[in-house]
Image 1 (cartoon, rainbow, N blue to C red):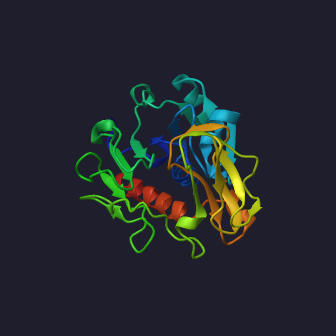
Image 2 (image 1 turned 60 degrees about the vertical axis):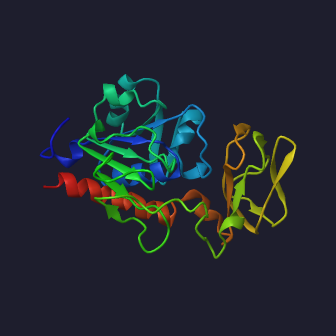
Length: 272
């Protein structure tokens, strides 16, 4: 592991996950000219806000979010070549073996599993955990608050983020009703598309034979790729009651706030 006296633009940054929040982090760091970034994902990502998630590169080979392109890497050896081409690298690596081959300066756990699935403080010179499940000063160096509200984006150097409430934050005054969840375990299928307008009570898709129904009017801001096998209760989609289709294709205010805090954490540590 390298110390804190290297040049900022030389930093190698590993991000666990490539969903909405992880992608916002990668985008913000890239735009700040921290461009040696690789993201580790599963072979079957469960992202909902797919239009702003680099994990779509797993299926499509590449994904562009607000002008930044991520490409799928076949092996760890491919990753430096992608950096040379100005791309973010996404690799299928649910067990994070790439960390052993490309030793990063920074690791960001952006899986948002609400628990620590194996991230350790000795994974890199700086290890950051997003949201609940991590202890700053314990298993990671810093924790970033992800709960909407007054403390969103706060850097925590000792202790943990606020516990998971299980209640979605309100968007346009609507909280739980805007989230589509799996009513049962099974294969999720839908013929609807992100960006479409929907009405409360409309059938958006099905898990097996059970209908998934919109709980509010709005625009489908996110929808899980189909067909996908899902467990009961998992988030399948996100309806934005504000009705602005353009919001489906841009990073959210919450994700930008958290991503900005990751950038601050890196600068605090290395900009000395």
